[in-house]
Length: 153
Image (cartoon, rainbow, N blue to C red; front, side):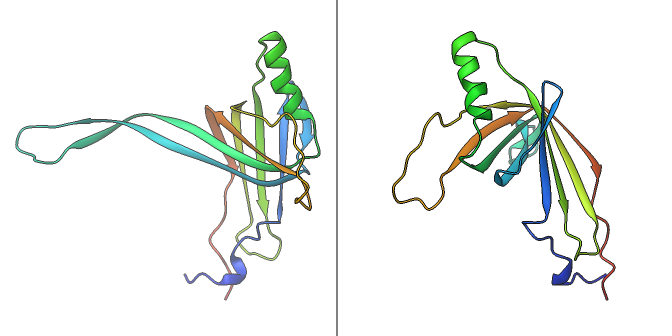
């Protein structure tokens, strides 16, 4: 089945939500969210083979998001950790849903997200809009909705 450009997903069409301590926060300030699962592997050699072989033995989830500098949410989490040692784990749900595409929507939920860093303050006289980059890890993931095969012809 051919893929037509009209079925490519627009980067602007979608939504993201953070569930923090049972409260759902729409992440309207997000510009970009990206998460990657990377396999961790052990390497070894065996008799009769010259090459090194690999075997998966786990995985690690990492991600980053670029957001407009318009919410104190993540700064408050980091300051709370600095002051009290209390760390916050939360979920992020990302929905890609471009109504002009025939492939439908995809929903991915990153679970037990934990911040690596957060910008505490920022000023930039050359910036039209202030934004910030936040890196994180996660240790579980679900995908309740996934894209369908395109039906455009």
